[in-house]
Image (cartoon, rainbow, N blue to C red; front, side, top):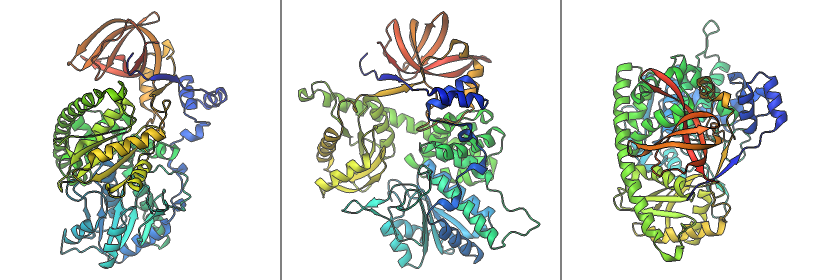
Amino acid sequence: MSGAPQLLVREVPPRQVLALEQAGLSPLLARLYAARGVCSADELDPDLARLLPPEGLKGMAQAAALLADTLQAGQRLCVVADYDCDGATACAVMLRGLALLGARADMLDYVVPDRAVHGYGLTPAIVELALSHDPQRRPDLLVTVDNGIASQAGVAHARALGLKVLVTDHHLPAVDEQGQPVVPQADALVNPNQPGCGFESKSLAGVGVAFYVLLALRAELRRRGAFAESAAQPRLDGLLDLVALGTVADVVKLDANNRRLVAQGLKRMRAGRMQPGVAALFTAAGRDARRANSFDLGFALGPRVNAAGRLEHMGMGIECLCTNDADLALTLARRLDQINRERRDIEAGMQEQALALLDRLMADPRLAGAPPAALALFDPEFHEGVVGIVASRIKDRLHRPVFVFATGADGNLKGSGRSIPGFHLRDALDLVSKRHPTLLKKFGGHAMAAGCTLAPDGHEAFAHAFAQVAEEWLDESALTRRLRTDGPLPPEAFNADTVRELDAQVWGQAFEAPLFCDRVQVLNQRLVGERHLKLRLRQGQALRDAIWFGRTELLPQEVTLAYRLSLDEYQGQQRVQMVIEAAADD
């Protein structure tokens, strides 16, 4: 089957399965967790008491003292946010948390860059925006959330103007010409990925770092006697719905610490204890918060918040998450839903254009029918706010590192890239920059996602240089897509109770949701909605319903399918169906 991935079955250590079963897990869950490296039930305990302590983060004591001094002096703070869901939730967590810990409303403000106008991070222009945002309330302290680690110029500019700066971030720092990390000279800096930080979980999202800073601030205020003995100290666990949303939406690794944060947030959502904006997002997305799961956060709520930063301004998303007015929250959530629909339409059009570009590229006889080791696509009609999503779609389709570029408001090309295992995207950009010193105006990011800016005529040179690095770094094995599955699903487990049990767990990046793999016979298949394949299958002696979203090519009569389980509701009835992710005919 053309383009089909290799389907691999995860190894399942028997001793770990036994230990988890003895701890009370069902045989299926024990098998799934053991295959994901869980050795004991303690790793699955969502109790907040098991969270890694805040003091393990380098710079946390200085950050807590700086914030406590600012609050107790009645000084003003301005939160500098980012224009994605992680940045929006981090901003809401910081503002709500500071208010809980004693900041008056007139002490708090926030600014968020416009993706098309300001670019990313605490730039000198954003410092000026923070100062001019409300001239009557000049901030004394800037607090970055989900950005700032690479903002040397912005931090220096702020401090030169007499502002103090606290950087809270989770991204990798910039590097100098010798490849050594460089961090801004802020008054305090908290980032698990800064040099010298021994915090065990390097995978905290920006919103997770913000939450940890608030925990440390509360402890510092308690140490200073800020809370009367007769009064309970402010509770911060009410912010965990926001922490969960930002953590899942940012696709960070769900290690044990992050899983606890997400599990606690989901628990509160299911119990109806969440911010009005989060509840409104569930309503706008047509999802039931009483059955909230990681999929809802990553594929329903998160994209609606992200849409504001992609097509309009993230201020709308932040206001939705910050307001205590349920009616206003619902109005904003419905507008975010509308913007997300517009985003999907733009994305679909761009994806068609990108595939047409790819078809023309593949027509080059020198490629012999195989795509290059890496791709960089550009069209003058591409929308800057959606390039990252389209890059992700093409990457998934071809299993190649992909950059997609659009023309920015300043005329330069703004690109967003997505990568595959074994190809560190930020390091690849660094090598391109060293080999071609004038090509990249700026760049940054992670191993799997990165961004860069080129001159208006820089696309072809970048495409060649980027592909050259990929050809050097990636061999045929790395360019072969592999999909890890959990093997066959026991026939007796194909039921609604299994779906509900699996949906109640926390799954996500590097802790993938269960994906089963079985050989089936295709009895019937047809297209529905012109873009989806609806199937009737025989699995052993049982008949199964299945759907493959976004698939239009028909399957052979006998095939191996990788699938997850879902509950399909129709006319008040629930039935289990297979949602197909991949197929192999051997």
